[in-house]
Length: 132
Image (cartoon, rainbow, N blue to C red; front, side):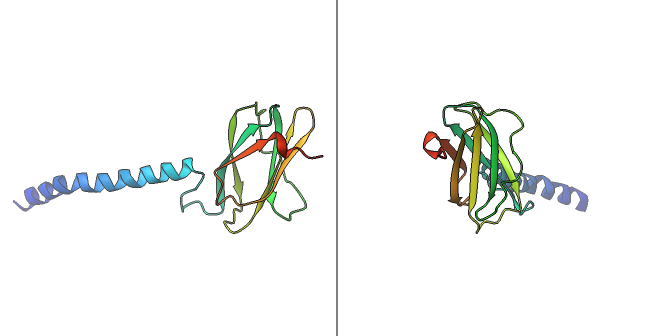
């Protein structure tokens, strides 16, 4: 008799726990789409870079504002015009500002300086970002 009641209680509560788990999964998925990593992965963030410069990009570099080195190219394949790529950086600090620099296949550089990744989910690189 006790086993039947426990089994009945489990059957009764299972949908409630399943609903909570689905809500948590949906929230994590929505945060990842916005470039916010789950709390289990602190210090790493992903965000999108959108190529709106009109030329194919061959390099994407990101660094903290004030750093003297750009670091390594984050692209493994060319980024064609009107295409977006998601990149991730380690050592993310939500209070820091960042710089991004891209290079097109003609050798020109485009840059944005001192932006917050906390506020941006997609960084749009446009022709006005061209360095002279």
